[in-house]
Length: 477
Picture 1 (cartoon, rainbow, N blue to C red):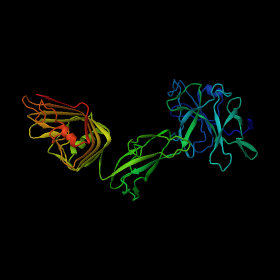
Picture 2 (cartoon, one colour):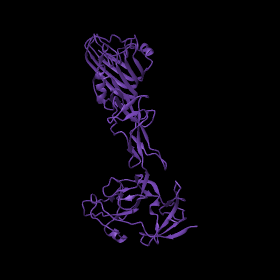
Picture 3 (tube, rainbow, N blue to C red):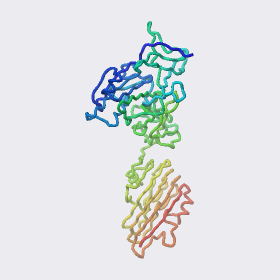
Picture 4 (cartoon, helix red, strand yellow):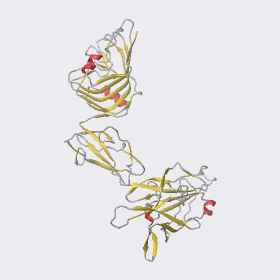
């Protein structure tokens, strides 16, 4: 049976104004008449267990916003909704052990309910002090005639404690039930509107960064701390809101290694950028996986200029490359190599990524040089899991020429696994009477790969390479 308990009001209310966007400031409780007289917009914030401004224990804060048409800060569509958060100097709300996810409209009882239209409140309690879990039941605060002061609480159990001879509400355990409607700073509070919002909290979480490296290896940071595969590199606060970014954090430097990137899965299939707050009442800390490889590598990110530098330097002193998805449309005329240049002691790890819209050129080409993108794959050349898509090759020749769009040859020992070639368009402009020696007009079966007599023979030997899409060679005399 429902019981009524007379209680002493602990839901203290305060008022404030926002100097940066609003004109005027009012301290203390304002009645309805005063609100309508000058402070037109009224927002009530329920902290739902939190503490306003670090120094008080009030659970409700009222703000009265003045929207004066004669002021420079006038907003015809209403004043901005003010998102009270820990980032708002002097106007923040915090809750120990929780992160503020956001401010939400309260949930109200649906049509047909005996309290249809009223805000839902709940009260959480422990049946016994030794209990780990709280139980939650609905409660119904009753207000005075002005709708300001809580005079009674209807509930199925006591919701007060004795402070001397006074009965007081266990206010921190009474909360407003949040709806699914989240508010942000784009929300406007119109003239005469009385908006009620409530804090939505999530347990304080840390993002765990776990090391992924070669099993059995140990690496140290700048302070000499040792790490091995699977160890926790760092913990970072998840922070407020329902999402967190993990892509902008500087990696931990481990001696003798190169940081590749951070992934959201242990299989290293999905790069981590934005991660969602885990669901549930007691979620575990989210874990991301930071991949490191031994040695000094060049990380080719989504900057097309880095791709150009990689192709220009293949065969030089920089020998290790990790590839990201890159669109190279903005880079025109990358230089082709000669088949006489053997690319060895080079490792390229594609990790399933694609380099697209590559454009290579050779101007003034002549007999004696075999032109190609990679040169010759050397005996210690390694390439894994990379796709090259939409490759354009433009050659202007002076004489008969020999060219192979991708590679001039491959020396025994070259390890190529998962190289996908898609949509190669080659155009050769040359004087009348000259021709491409390895691909005359009547035979166009050997212009992608050299050294094996035909493209088919090359692909039969190097089964880790696949060719797909529309691949064409056009010769203009």
